[in-house]
Amino acid sequence: MILLWGLLEDDSTGLVHDALEKSGAKFFFLDHRRIFTSEVEFEAGLGSDIKGTLSDGQRSLNLAEIGAAYFRGYNFLDYEEMQGKGYDDPLALKATGFETQLIGYLNSSKALVLNRSEPSATNGSKPFQLKIIQNAGFHVPETLITNNPEAARDFIAAGDGTICKSISGVRSIVRKVTDAQIDSLADIQWCPTLFQKIVPGINYRAHVLDDQVFAVRIESDELDYRYGQTKMYPDTVPVEVAQKCISLNQKLGLGFSGIDLMRTPDDKWFCYEVNPSPAYSYFERGSGMQVSRAVAKFLVDADSGRRPS
View 1 (cartoon, rainbow, N blue to C red):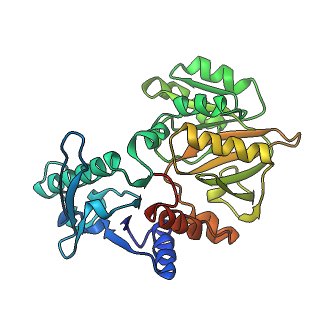
View 2 (view 1 turned 30 degrees about the vertical axis):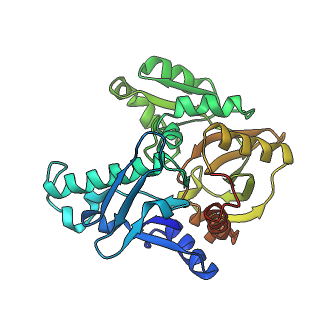
């Protein structure tokens, strides 16, 4: 049995859901909006398998049946039931407890999970992830992380262009540092900030699924292509680059990831970061590359024992 946990309104979850349905696969869809009524109970003895049940308030699933799982989490505080309420509300405590227990089960189960918590956490620290990226053989942009305004000012002055972005996994819009921002650099003393030199070239997004690489070439009129007039094309990357992507995915302990790459005019390949819960649907819709079908097949094969867990 495949466990699919998320929201159908989320395109990346919805596309996998549709692909699983079309394939005739056995799967249990757990709507994240049912987090307030869902229950999970399990137990494990030393040297024995974990046993338990999962219920969404209407249907139940024997946890031992789960051979593969794919989930994309959400902030339940955004749901209608939580309007005007905080984390200390009984409803929030119920949802937090359920989420913690189910993720705890998935992290400790024998099922193939896309992706477990520990490897996914590397995206919460850009400096840590950049070192792993570098060790995988990729070039990384010249980077400075500082809360020292003078150090930041010197770094920005020594080059043709610099961007700033979040150090954590929180999404931020990538923009070139402007003169107005330089005048406000004193503010970073309260918040360490990541600065990077702009690397000229062509953007690529590589989605890695185990030993498969799905590459998309991106053309845009904006530095951050998510917010510009953007065109995407299915493409391939050189074999050695593909192998580095696969190796990086493995080094991070991930089964599925989205890797942001830049190919320079002199054919050097830079890597910016690795997303452990990629919104691949944006790239699938833009390029026509069928990542969702590959994810669905990967889950089906794992559930049937044709792939190692």
